Amino acid sequence: MSLPIRARRALAGLVLLAATACTTGPSLENQGEVTAPPGDSRELTIGSAGFTESDLLAQMYALLLERAGYSTDIISVTNREIYEPALESGQIDVVPEYAATFADWLNAKANGADAAPVGSPDLAVTMKALRALAAPRGLTVLDPGRAVDQNAFAVAASYAKKHDLKTLSDLGRANLPVRLAAGDECVQRPYCAPGLEKTYGIDIVAVDPKGVGTTQAKQAVQNGQDQMVLTTTTDATLDAFGLVLLADDKKLQNADYVVPVVNRARAGSDGVRDALGRLNTVLTTADLASMNEQVDSWRRLPEDVARTYLESKKLIPKD
Image (cartoon, rainbow, N blue to C red; front, side):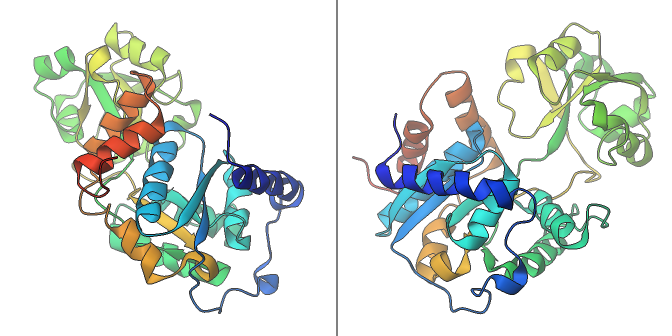
């Protein structure tokens, strides 16, 4: 499906922006929109980060905004170093983001790559930090809903049954040696091997560098080569591999709740907030996983899946 003309123009603008924005982005001193009143442009460009879940969220945002009387286009920009400055400058008006990840990204942008992380497992603390970092850049972070896409750990269902495992604490108490299929960065990341050992007492004997939630990584756990795999809470393929998630009962993972982020001067109005806020009371983590599966496994179009979901929740009328 080809992009609308206006979307293609917006994308062309982003290509031009990439030459400079990917390294520095707009400076806070030159923005000029930071203190402007909330805007209510009737034509809005929604950005997607280019993966299935982001595409689905962007489509739902577009449908809800169109229901509220806005005209929308969607563009896909896979690099946050490009789409975030475009959001600041108003070339993109709305993007779906993840609270803790985006807070840490803005913090590193403002205070350097070595800045202490501000994202945490506490949603309220994370949102406070995120909004404080976003506001000087002319961005408004809308309220999070119920859906969260966090790192998660899965084991074979047979392994869980054999050892009576439902939580990561259960695995720690079982004193089992665990080979973990994950990205190679897992060796150092506090949410991964070090955190599993420190927080849960899990005996990580090796990290098998097969990637995060990849087919290869899941197959390694399925066939017993590894005992656990790093994936995400919205991974819809676990059943196909005979895997189950172990609950993060001590909240090792950060609060990566789905949050819309908008350019305040163009899309900071109550109209946008109310339209997107309608999703908050219905969209769950399980819903996102199910929609991801429909796109990735059933080969349905994100727009069709998003429309069917919103219709089923009576957030938009049926065609």
